[in-house]
Length: 349
Image 1 (cartoon, rainbow, N blue to C red):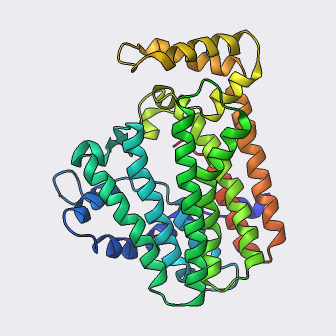
Image 2: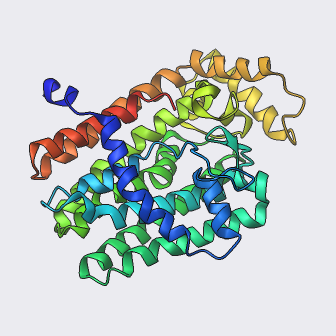
């Protein structure tokens, strides 16, 4: 197995999904009324803030890669999964536009977020527009398979929104259990990756049993993905992540390392709980120094939150791969699913 996995070029796999999906994605965005079309183009990195063409960082493209790959499970051509890849990307970016505004994030992919450049109203409207386009792209296919895919995407989108609501509510609570955090992250990240992992297969004619197994793979891959994201949200290199240092601590996020550290007990856990309780009463972190965030990060690590989260990422990765055992597919396709899962747990951004 190891020899086959190393033979998979993950960069090429990600690029294939991006190359197939981008022209259709651009055509969908062009349907938006001005100025929403140009605001969306800025968000996707196709133009700069002045409207000039740009070759911006369009993200990792894991979801399009999964959607296109999943079409090959029932024996369809990769192109069959393109409408699914585009629909998932539209929903994902709808959530990013709204999340950046709600979280107050000023940087994404190494440049200012849409709400900082074009204002909150445009961030909301463009997000809404992308959400509507996602359904259009699928339903205009007019096939039974497209209807099945649209239903799965709608269910995943509702779960994603549930997860964002949970995430926001947890910021105002002193304590969140590990189970609550995993449920939130399963909704916020796992649901859409689950859909991406199955939607191409559905469009290619796969039955519900196959689609459900691929969704299990994607759901647990999403939990692994988010666990890694949570680690990067505290200890990630800003040059790689495109976000501020200690990003999640600045936003008071109850991410997995924080929740696990608070649940661990012991002196570091208790001291962290005291500091975070005091932080919750502060209106903002304007007076905080970098050293104060560093202290909190060190306490999280000392209490075991960093190590536990890294182990959880590996555990979810294992569960994701086990879900593939229930699906018959060409071995080269299985190897590619495995390679994408491996990429998710070793990435640095």
